[in-house]
Length: 247
Image (cartoon, rainbow, N blue to C red; front, side, top):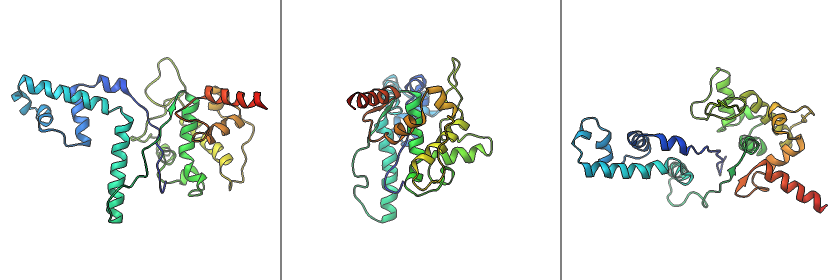
């Protein structure tokens, strides 16, 4: 957006823990130049000249890098620093670019994941910066739609791998077609300038998680207002029940 960003992150600690020391160092060097010692460690020629103490130092360093690879704070630090430097360069100024620290919410189930993804992808539509999801700039939904036309999935985004099963591949537990339809239906409800209305038929995702259209729309619109530090369908039901009991 023009003055803020929304990102949905998947924290993959298991993958980070499975990486070798050299893999960790190489990944970290994509972001930073790194120490001379770590550069020597991954160099096939210089690595043989390292002493045992130097190797142990690199291993200790790699464990610090390993934790940072699945740390949200480090991710946001890198992302915000890049944007701030670029914006300050374009504006020919210095100083703080961001108003304050980022806020995050834990997505505890499939329903909250789908709701938050739809919320983020519909930001430009709701702000009247785009008429449709496929025409909205800087969104994952646009990237996914453009890639789908070529029968591909965007390399920068976590792929859709279908409905949950025991042998689930690594990826989002939805069908791409279902998610695109879900965003479109939600967008028609959320955008005040849309003439279309959501019909009574539910998408496969909504049917699977047992949500009514009204419940789904309330959950999507309440991502930043109803929920605080975490989001889940169970929380939503409890909160809805509380208001029902008070009525």
